[in-house]
Image 1 (spheres, rainbow, N blue to C red):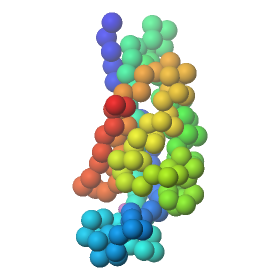
Image 2 (image 1 turned 120 degrees about the vertical axis):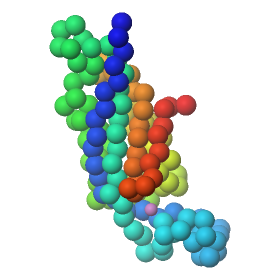
Image 3 (image 1 turned 90 degrees about the horizontal axis):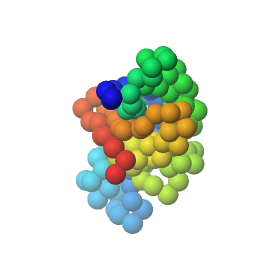
Image 4 (image 1 turned 180 degrees about the horizontal axis):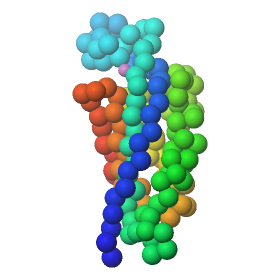
Length: 139
Ligand code: NI
């Protein structure tokens, strides 16, 4: 049976800071650059979630994209949009707010609901700036 990958994009804006308290301000600046700014800063994030499956004989859909958008908003966007990732977001507690860690956490937020909706989550792509994005495939 033909397997098709479909992708839904959502966007959010959030503040964060990357720094280790056990490092000097100079070392933090050297490693984390502008993302170590003590008074926080923001990014306009874009997140693409890809689901794989065979198109349904009844609808032709792999997964209903409006249902996928709803899951993304309820499980991720509503919890992070216009929030401080380091202070306000329960699913990021105890993790450094790198794009890598955020992509893993987003996967964990989504997988169960997407499976319940009949889809197979295969990729979370998260873009922090125009020039940088990460992809997580669940392993
Ligand atoms: Ni940053």
